[in-house]
Amino acid sequence: MSRKLLFGFVVAVLCFSLALIASAKTYRIGVTQIVEHPALDAAVDGFQKALADAGIEVVYDRQNAQGDMSTALMIAQKFVNDRVDLILAVATPTAQAAANVTKDIPILITAVTDPVSAGLVKSIERSGTNVAGTSDLNPVGEQLALFKEIDARIKRIGVVYNAGETNSVVQVKLAQREAAKLGLKLVEAAVSNSSEVYQAALSLVGRVDGIYVPTDNTVVSALESVVKVAAENDLPVIAGEENSVARGCLATVGIDYYRLGYQTGEIAVDVLTGRAKPQDMAIQYQKDMKLVINLKAAEEQNVKLPQSLLDRADEILK
Image 1: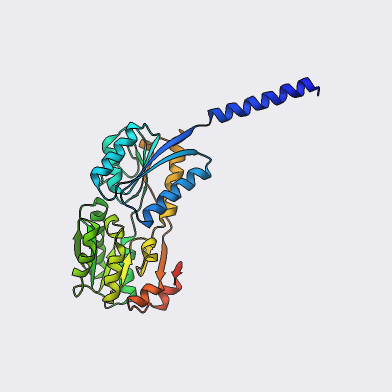
Image 2: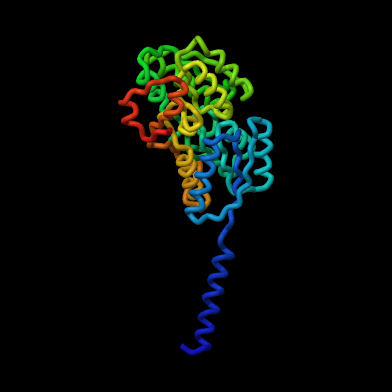
């Protein structure tokens, strides 16, 4: 090949490469999270990893509403004004805020327990709206059954939750039904903000044999308060997800929020690249649940775990 032809070839390759670089889009994604706690943080991390693995270039605007719905609405409106390409809404209140301010920008949800009851989608099988993503609905019956497996004498279970969170109300209703099947009585202690969690947990002492903590954002953000009361009063605490077990709850059969966020990120890739539209998509669930046990928590809560439970654990924390 002559120098002239070689030079022409190199120039053509360079021009082609520059054209590809110029045509590669950098997407803008607004991330709105209701509160900061490890489970929700892990979901966002998983989401971002999925897009990075797919080679999608993204500039993120990550915002936290600090548990305030009016702040969540302002954040969502900011994303609309900024004309982001996609909104990731983490947890039910922020998802509702985003859905209230835009029907055009794709909204990907994660850590939302019941998207239908929350008014985000028309059905689980087909969204019918600009919202798609994943649900963190837990196997509540399996979680409550852990109490009976730990100690057959357990009869009354306390549940601390925020009655203002749609996802929590859904879980408590599920827990009521599942508890009845297991011969358990559910004793409720409702809160409206994280500062009330300690007193709510304390109010259960003497009235219950154990405490159940669902995936309630308000309660989980102040989980150490529940764990403290449980340890001081020998009450086993079963959680709705594994991050709460790492923070001092006894056990769960639950969701890995990092994996759930990653799954949501894979959906986002399809939406951003035009392979799918939110309105045509089904809400997805995590299929594989993990039995996680915290041995230190067992000691602090004065619980003797049966060997059968330890033998089938997927992960044991020490």
